[in-house]
Amino acid sequence: MNKSESINTEEQYKKALDKIYQAMNSSALLEQSEEDEFNDLVTLVEAYEDKHYPMPKLETVYLSLGSNLGDRKEILEKAIVLLNEKVGVVVKQSKDYETAPWGVTDQPDFLNLAIEIRTPLKPLEVLEQTQSIENQLGRVRKEKWGARLIDIDILFYGNQIIDEPNLKVPHPLIQERDFVLSPMVEITPDFVHPVLGKTILELRDYPRTPPTE
Ligand code: ADP
Ligand code: MG
Image 1 (cartoon, rainbow, N blue to C red):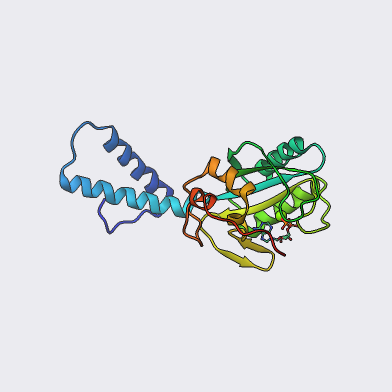
Image 2: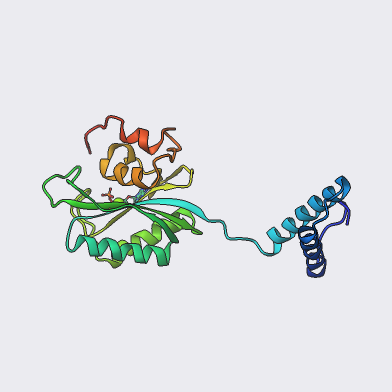
């Protein structure tokens, strides 16, 4: 098969695959011309597969979870099970961090953690799912930064910068919040903030500004 040919049918694709497997299983070294032919064949097979057998593109997403009412530990665990079902595979999970409330201080302590998820969903679809999980777990939306059964914030969606009315990513307060940075340092210290250009570890060791409305 030479470069000008392309793979258009399933039969041609199967033949090409056979050739590739044969070359891979053969102990004979390829001549330069055979090697070029082999590489061209792989390129054609990949192009055919992209078109006919596309792999779902998964994005790496970091979420921050917090709870300061009810059985906090149990609620966080339930949220993670639901996220795994509705958003994507939870590949990393930090331990729980007991933290004093931030912003509105006369309320119970929080239990916070961070997770890494691999998701096929688009950013706004992730938000839709995290909000539906918050609701399902009985979150009542009252005061800003106030007590809640569960809060799920989208910290990062890969390296994307999103500025929609209802979704800001990277989450604008990451660099100000120890309860976000500490769990994130545990699971992904070297992740570079796509706007600030600093790693999570560097951000944790940076001075914070106190919460203001
Ligand atoms: P907070 O987490 O600030 O205490 P909420 O959880 O009630 O408050 O979120 C308020 C709004 O923040 C939501 O309606 C949501 O649309 C918006 N929002 C903007 N960016 C994000 C983000 N990155 N993650 C989660 N929610 C976000
Ligand atoms: Mg929130």
